[in-house]
Image 1 (tube, helix red, strand yellow):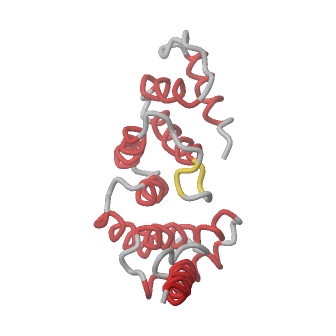
Image 2 (cartoon, one colour):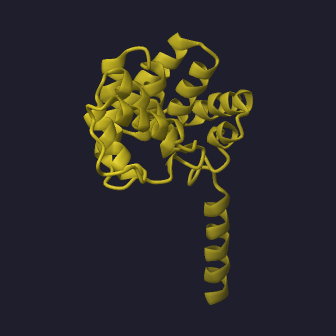
Length: 186
């Protein structure tokens, strides 16, 4: 009886670790995004979406890959789906930053959501495919366009070793902030 319980437990553990229901995204499209193989990523997201239409990882990925392929209507559709699940998740925020990059106020709103979530930022904002610095680069570049140098400086002090004694009104110091943004490692 004890042996059959052990065998049953062992089989159950094997089933759990191999079952896609536990982690359907262990080999997800974000792996391909990291490798910059967007065609495979897109195909993987589309395939996974059939089985997991309520996964924010997948809808965010679909939105991202549709955006990469310049299919903005489809990108917006999946972005909206992601936002219905959780408008403050990193998947939605990342794609929103890209989608709204020509709409400074919308882009700023999304980036500020991201910044407000963390006291210290994780290395990767999306799995191990998209670094937080990629989001910072998108968001801070938009903030520069909006002349929000005070906000930019506050964030840069949190994520870089920029000097604490810059004057946000000085054009030389503003240029230094821009240089720090440009050097953010993606």
